[in-house]
Length: 490
Image (cartoon, rainbow, N blue to C red; front, side, top):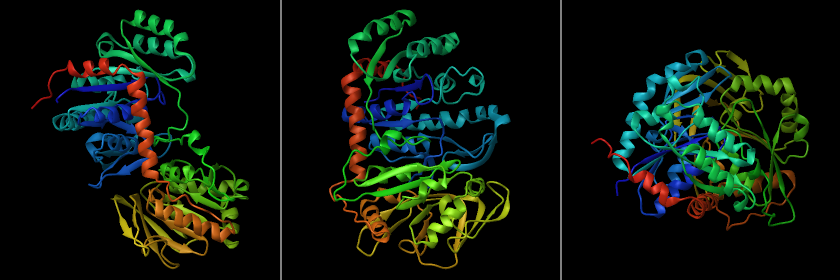
């Protein structure tokens, strides 16, 4: 069933492109269509490692799971990971390719061939490829070097629809303004619109939808309702609705987890399973005084480890964490957070800072290497449960004391622990076991819900998106858009 491709653009970042693509992937799968997601270039600090050891944006991994296919580098051939206001670490086809300076932004255009080849590879293997743009297609200063929005669409001859977030306000001006800023050739690629996150009575919106269609000569493919707490893996900032856990604890007590929001914090999706675990309250910490009532303090990954260390010291987190460790109150560091808890960091790769003293709470040292560790480790625990994770790091951690955190990996000393593995809390048995150990340390009683599965919860969120697509979008019109396209090259 060879159909075609569509590019989902947005009036802005956060308009709902990823949400719509994810929902379309699952809905098409339900129709018996083999489908793959694609985002030519993503800028995100939340990433994932494929089975082949390739790093891609976490959002594209979720979209692949929605399509019931294995994530791969072709689904996100270019990934930019900001390390400062002016530099980004560049991943091409899942492998590191150095730094990109802000002044050399136009050089991305040289990657158009890589992007096109990756897309055509997917088109040859799947009935449909649902593509996602980035930011806004009307950023006129970037159009000449564009490889992800309409520059990509022109190169591979695919139509586009534009999504706008009505909850932000001004969505119709954004639709019309976006179209007006495009040249005639780019305008011809835009075939219609999708309104996202609408609250209220749809009949009240109908006159504006009709006016938009009349002004632009393009249909509105539907209006998706506002749904709080979808809980999909975000590109950077965490979804605040995810941290308002509606599930009551199974017992009489709750665990309070504080996550230190480090500069350039990465892979914050590690925290999502904790945020939705019944009986756990997660909040983000900006100042050390906020740690006072936390049962567990977690230092997440960061794309700027030495800068994060300076930030911690500037705010007094170093002293507060040392006092917490002395009082035997749990602290956990993940990847960059683990490196921060050690004694020394030698970095001539990420920050070019040489050797700096770290927080000194774990007997480990870290040396940054130019080549990157990209791995999918797994371990069988003593209770027989399998724990899986993934590693994304330049730092090589040498353990010089303490005990392993789990199955020979990481380090634990007293109530302080660290691990290089991301995704650990997605393992239900490990997450519950660890939370029970934290509760025992702080004198609380954590009662887990054995029926709760993080993987099932995520799948239900994706199914909900597919339900919304089916109920609220003109799926027949979108299928027609896919059908009236030239066949991919042999």
